[in-house]
Image (tube, rainbow, N blue to C red; front, top):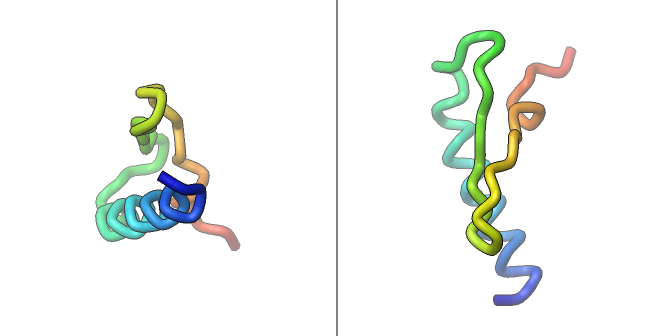
Length: 51
C-alpha cells in the first residue's frame, strides 16, 4: 500500500468516526487501531471543538 492509499484510508476512517462524534461525551476517548502495526492510538484531539 502506498502512502497516498494509507492517507485515503485514514481520511475515510476519520470521516466515518466524525459521523458518530456528536454522540460522545466530554472526556470520552476515541481510539483508532493502526492496520499496519496493530497499535491503538488516541485520536480524540481530531474531534474536539475548536473555538
